[in-house]
Amino acid sequence: MSPSERRSAIMDLLCDRRCETAKNLAALFGVTARTIRNDITALSCTYPIQTIRGRYGGIHVASWYHPYRQELSPQQEVLLRKLMVNLEGEDLTVMESILTKFARRTG
Image (cartoon, rainbow, N blue to C red; front, side, top):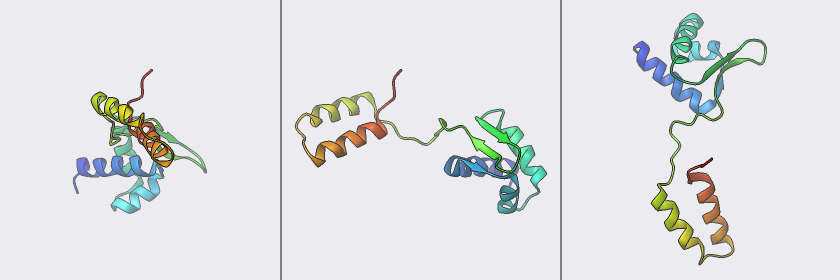
């Protein structure tokens, strides 16, 4: 695995787990912790990564960073809101949860 492939895999893993230690990443990728620290230094130039030292520390990706999050287009959101007017009960609750999860955040 090349360094760029490893760094991409590290970012995928961090986005999924949100936090991991250099030691665990090193074991997972079969490299030294120093190599992982170098990778994290390189990745932190582009991505919102923070390292925290100590017993409960580790490598964290910012809580707001979700590169793969799907969002509705404005047209999709308008259509769903129009359809929502005719819903009630559990169907309305499901539609509200869809809009909460996938609608674009403004402001």
